[in-house]
Length: 329
Length: 261
Ligand SMILES: Cc1cc2nc3c(=O)[nH]c(=O)nc-3n(C[C@H](O)[C@H](O)[C@H](O)COP(=O)(O)OP(=O)(O)OC[C@H]3O[C@@H](n4cnc5c(N)ncnc54)[C@H](O)[C@@H]3O)c2cc1C
Image (cartoon, rainbow over all chains, first blue to last red; front, side, top):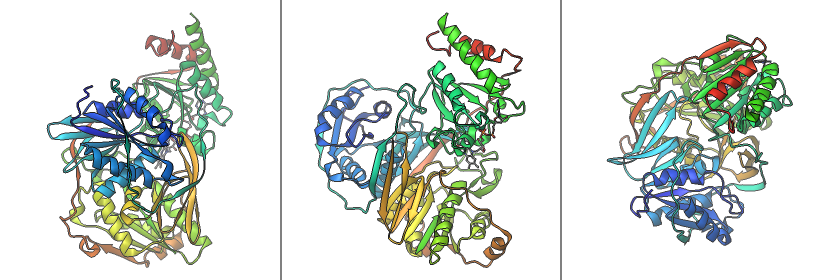
């Protein structure tokens, strides 16, 4: 949108310890730019500042503040909160936006508590009305849409990953190195760390257009290859029910539902998932839902646009073949 | 060592949960109130620690209106917690996260603690912010979303798994941690526990008792509108007669859901 320097929105972006941008910066900057001027903040090695400022400007940041992570060492969160506090003092934003990741939420929550500001978490979008910034929330599995706002002061907001399509236009890069005063707040330290292995060929579950999920009906972790084959045939991401996670078929980060990830893709396919209310809470706002389940009474059929009562072990291989057949034509 | 476990009463996720469209607040009458499952798991972590370290005291702390909460909280005592503290005050109706965190911080300070254990996200608010706010307000270290927990006399440690990384972290006590569903399900209260719970200390505090003057601390965020989304209805359902895979593919093609087709 505009590059107006008024109405700054401070955007905390996630980076790896090496200073690589994590996915999601474009979404945050896009949301910020739709209500004001997006000012990005990253905690990263100073040597990466120049490159980061270019990447972030490309994604719509009108200014990029980089706080040097050298002094942060292995500290878990305080350096990020301190950086937010310093950036807030410098930018005087109308709102602060962070990803609703574990780290983004931790930092935003601590900062809001420290600065005594209102906090809106796990929002699905932001807007502006006559009185200022408002945050949209999707409550109780999407059954309700609720808007909130701050009564006084800036609103600190975390944005659910993959919830917003708005993207900003590129801006000229404008880098500022941010001096941060350490608060000396007690903090935890990271004692060991490894990057997760990301299946680069598959889209991220959060924000994917197509999600194929498997449940306890798959029967084993090996059988999850059926879910993978269908996801790959459609170019989709993989999800799971909590029963499948509890049984150890797949990692917890794949769980869709009340206490897992909430998704709202164009297409959601549930394989061997009964459709418990807590699972539906994480997927029932999907545009189109397809379910395959051998139990005709399974509640997943109540929300499915197309339901098949049948054995997934015969239906899915046939479906994959039929999709490839159609694509070949 | 004293461990405070934050317990939250929520509408049962198995029921119909509703919001009052006038106030934007939960309609408490419409769904059965239960302890949020994740807070029961948090209690389980504390109880297992006490089994290993018998000198440990486990205190339940909950903020919420009078009514069902004392009964709900008793379940935690029946599971094995030593005592419970319930903070309730009419001034807290509509309290936002920031205010709730301030109240819990004041109560935790008054109780005294080495470790506070909370669930990572609740099933009604879904925020996952409160434990972090609490750590900040108490001026202690915090660890959010632990998938494993080790507690000793001086430190708490555990693993955090995210989409992009996995790390082990450790903090000196006192500290605030939140745990995920990767930790074990809570035990069921047995008959002996239920009987014993009736005699366990149960303290009720209002804002004044915590040294907070009602009205002085106010909610900084408010709900400005609430709307119900229309419920979804069932579509077409077929029974597989040998060609269901093909039929789904037809449906996908017709709806332009096969990329590159
Ligand atoms: C507080 C709380 C939070 C929760 N959060 C979540 C959450 O985030 N996500 C979640 O998913 N659940 C959640 N749950 C759990 C939820 O209640 C269900 O237990 C869970 O969703 C069940 O998973 P499932 O459908 O895979 O397993 P089941 O309910 O056991 O269903 C398996 C299904 O597979 C079908 N099936 C078996 N074999 C075949 C076959 N060969 N072909 C076709 N179909 C077959 C069966 O008919 C059955 O319907 C939560 C519960 C609570 C209390």
